[in-house]
Image (tube, rainbow, N blue to C red; front, side, top):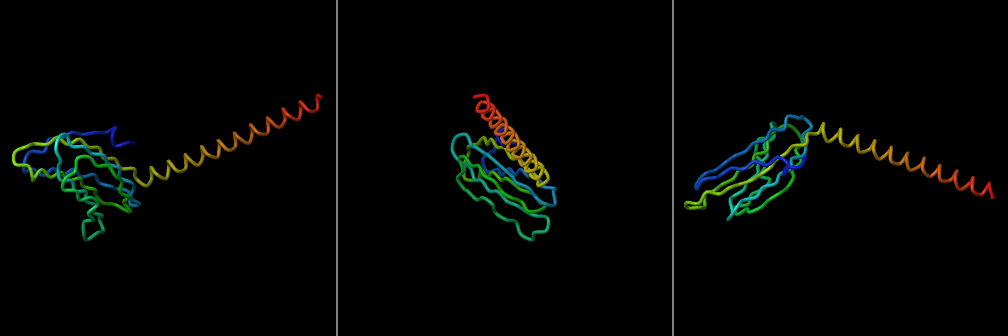
Length: 145
């Protein structure tokens, strides 16, 4: 999945902080992918990871003046990734944030890897079959001459 396929828009009022949390429930973790854009001006963007076994929150991104941002984070276990939009520097201007955040958990990534390996193997097998067929055609041309 692409985060741009699952966009959400929110208006962040002046002085407001909006938090969006996405949990990872796979004990093996997964890959988070995000994309966000702010219409007109900038906004404070902070992205934090908190694993269920972690004592401290990990700051993944801390950008006080974000206009556009995209990135990834590899979680190594269960926890939550939090997007935080801060409109605390604007005296009276609300800001519209459009963002997408997807999680590809470890099980999905493993399945995709297996499918990709299978497709590659089949492609190689198909290529070998094609080469063998071409060899037979060339050999038959030489035999017939």
